Amino acid sequence: KQEVTQIPAALSVPEGENLVLNCSFTDSAIYNLQWFRQDPGKGLTSLLLIQSSQREQTSGRLNASLDKSSGRSTLYIAASQPGDSATYLCAVLSKSLRAGGTSYGKLTFGQGTILTVHP
Amino acid sequence: DAGVTQSPTHLIKTRGQQVTLRCSPKSGHDTVSWYQQALGQGPQFIFQYYEEEERQRGNFPDRFSGHQFPNYSSELNVNALLLGDSALYLCASSLAGNSNQPQHFGDGTRLSIL
Image: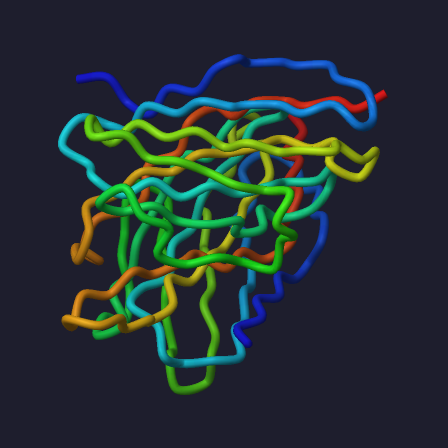
């Protein structure tokens, strides 16, 4: 059974700091790993997706890495801003084969890291 | 290009009642997954529909059921509501067999059980 853990549970930093969010997973049989952002009371916004064969992905001030063999991923946020305040969720898309060879993956999420960036 | 839309946005029910939540997937997507997110927790997978059939199911009781229509939209039904069913219910859509693209989520339906 896939389990995903995120550390820390909460993080409060001053504006401008670089920060790292951690994610670990127990089963390396994954298609990809995704990082999402969730604002209070809202749905999920996909930030970065790393395929199982990739090592990292970058988008603007965000950089995500993946070490599938050790079951770890990090999300690096450079020069944090108050607008980055949100909950960050890590999720892995697990492999699941069905008859006919078509795969129907399900996402397993961590508990999230609540990030607060204060001015 | 409309993204994933869910209705209603908020719902209040009492214990024992039943509820139906609705989801329209992003244009071009054919697979719909439902997740339950309790307060302060990460989303938990309920089930996934493709070609109008339930393809995978998480650890949820039979009180949770669903349906997918020919236009790929989906419904989540919950019977005999319990206080513990209070949560944000999220719908995600994707294209079957394509793991290169992220799943797209709607804004969810906030269900409160009194």
